Amino acid sequence: MAIVTVPQLSDNYAYLVIDDGSKECGVVDCAEADKVISAAKSHGAKIVAVLTTHWHGDHSGGNNDIASKVAGIKIYGASAEGGKIPALTNPVADGDKVRIGALEGRVIGIPAHTNGHVAYYFPTFGAVFTGDTMFVGGCGRVFEGKASTMVASLKKLAALPDSTQVYCGHEYTEKNLRFALTLEPGNAALKKKHEWSMKTRAENKFTVPSTIGEEKRTNPFLRTDSPELRANLKQRDPSMADDPIAIFAKTRELKDHF
Image 1 (cartoon, rainbow, N blue to C red):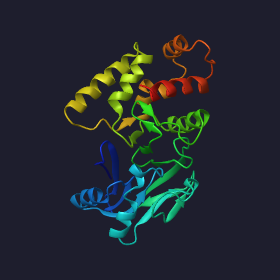
Image 2: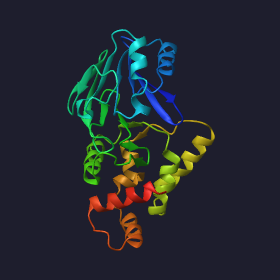
Image 3: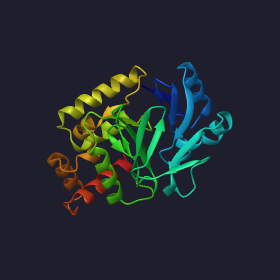
């Protein structure tokens, strides 16, 4: 079993999910078909499916191209995206299963960034592909849902085992952690991870994956009950309600302008 990171566009990631036995391979979020086809070839893998997390073009823009180049390919994506996913052959919803060779993945509905955003969780790998809902040190903008929708979606992901590897859709880590430090400057785990992310990027390496456990320690959007984070938000907005949704919404609003 292997997960291969394939950079796309300026800061996007696609991933190959390869079943060693059959050498069948799924592509998570195809923006540039030729790059993923070439990566699959170099690993001796045969692409059989695309697993689309949401309809935005930087995650689905290569679907038509890959469908025209790989005969019989299955394109998975959420039916709740309302037909916006290009070349869709296999609509999915929360709780559905997807199969790549002998590997079975579970679809987790995590709307808010888009109405039908999904994650793909592979228990055998101990890995979840979170698209633009959970980033390393951050979360996606709330475009089509409400703050409460995103909080519920992040909670679903945070309920996975702490050891679960988090493969997200963008290389946003350093900036996300720099923002997080404005709210929790006293968080030692966060400081350490931010220093690591700067060094890693300076060496032109990927900061993905993280783990669910690490995200719980460092991601401000999973830390709405941190006293330090709450105190910093209260200083900025004394009228803010003292509940997780309001705290999340204020954190997201500050990040939108960071």
